[in-house]
Amino acid sequence: MIRWIRDARRKLAKIPIRVVLSMYILVIVVFAIIYTNIPSGFYHETIRLEIAYDREAEEFSKKILKAMKNNFIEVYKTEQLCFDDIEIDISTMDAGKSYVHSERVIVPINLIVEVKNKESETINELDDCDKMKKNEKIIYKDFFDISLSTNALKINDNFFVPLVVTSNVFVQCDNIDVEKINYNQLFKHEGFLSPVIKIDQDIENEIQDFLLASKGFSNDINNHFLSMLYLSAVTITTIGYGDIVPITLITRMLITIEALVGMTLMGIFLNNITYRE
View 1: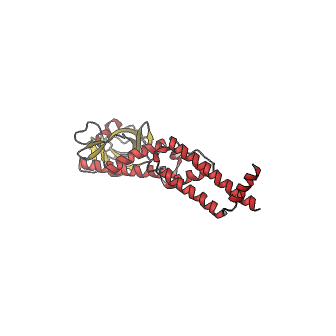
View 2: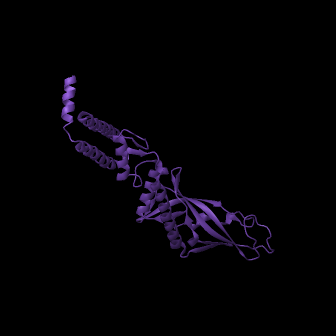
View 3: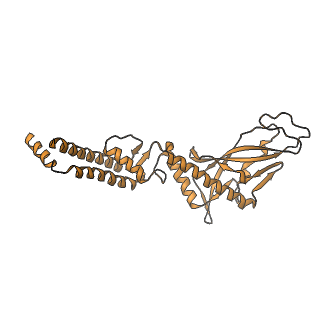
């Protein structure tokens, strides 16, 4: 037995070290390519903490904001709309970073709202507002959350996303009747009883991808070659951080095979070094 082991070591030692290292790197790349082509086989535990996710959340918000503005202009043929003494200018809208909550994609929207002051006397005290006189405008910033359903409605080749609008007042002034600001009225198309925005097919796909990414499943945000190359490297070295986890039988078997191949190549590498010494 000992003689057989010595013979095996002698034969393996004939393999040049550079060849062993080249095979090691080649295995990493090959398995990374294989993993990339099995996108549904992995769960990304830390996706919400990654820079790519934050960047995608910001870009997604910008696209939704643009769709909302276009939707508003298409319906009302103007950028401004008045509710009694309240004036809303859609051009003042800006969006915060999107996030996912309860199976919905949430897009925080900021909006400047102007309210005409109809008080007959000078207002001396307003908690968070400047002092205003008769017929002046009170300008304050409101933000509201737009919840996008992941089930878009397709009508005449157009996609419409149902919305849930939740308003939150940044600055509360005693003489502002917040109930008059009905944001649900801002985003309506003819034929819909509830607020909707019209989107294109690309945004519909991004809604689905963004929801999947937030849950840690593979999509265009986290399923790319560099992520799988990283997974392949930590697998072949048997480090196994656990931030990307195989969730199917095929991917688990591939991970196991790569780890065994890595250990074998590393053993050959160490054998060649010690045998030659």
